[in-house]
Length: 271
Ligand SMILES: NC(=O)C1=CN([C@@H]2O[C@H](COP(=O)(O)OP(=O)(O)OC[C@H]3O[C@@H](n4cnc5c(N)ncnc54)[C@H](O)[C@@H]3O)[C@@H](O)[C@H]2O)C=CC1
Ligand SMILES: O=C(O)[C@@H]1CCC=N1
Image (cartoon, rainbow, N blue to C red; front, side, top):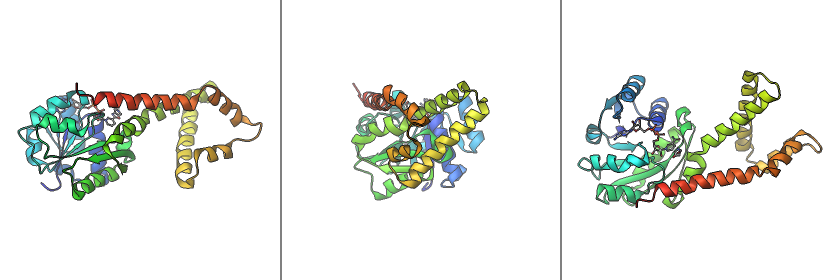
């Protein structure tokens, strides 16, 4: 029971985390199970990862020390109602649903003695490069937080935070991969427009993004300082930079992330 984990929901994120846990070696496949009502999806997940699949969560609560809730926020109340009779204070409940505050789970379960950790990961978990923020309720002790951190650090990097900051994490890094993919898409299209064959544009755009991010991380320099190193007086970069500034590129990105943060807050309203 000690090193068993049950996933309620085997969708995109459930799969990303299951793959991450197996690839990192933190959990054996036979210690992982998934509750997934969609039969086609359940068969795919259990066959692909060699884990046990169930149509509902009852068996998971009985067999798993840690339960990972990976369903959409909109159906969480239904999932918790169906789990109520099986939940115990011994379970460590980790939830990745956007927006829902820990108090939502305590109210839905009708008890406040459960150990609940709210996490906001992102899809690069699929390749063990997730960025996650997490926060535990008053019942979680150092061992519980450590267990959660260990899981999150096997699938990427994680930061413990006050729960009030998790909507900000959701807007920044939870949804963040989508912004980066949009930017990559735009760079590739721009390369094609300038006459490059698609595979060449893809290779150059993606390696540029990867190299730039690595340079940021390894040099520990501020983005503006690294940008200055690219920008020759009277050169090409400043011509492009002028357009980005005039179009309000940074403001657009900040507005977009603010909209995601606000949407996360809205999802958490339980009226
Ligand atoms: N997609 C993303 O990038 C991220 C998503 N999240 C959060 O992760 C959660 C899951 O999101 P996705 O995986 O993208 O959604 P998804 O729709 O791909 O997966 C949800 C899965 O739950 C299953 N499901 C429905 N009812 C169920 C029930 N009663 N019991 C068990 N499983 C049930 C569905 O069949 C589906 O396979 C959401 O709460 C979302 O806010 C968090 C971080 C990033
Ligand atoms: O779009 C969403 O609501 C989820 C939460 C963070 C990323 N995807």
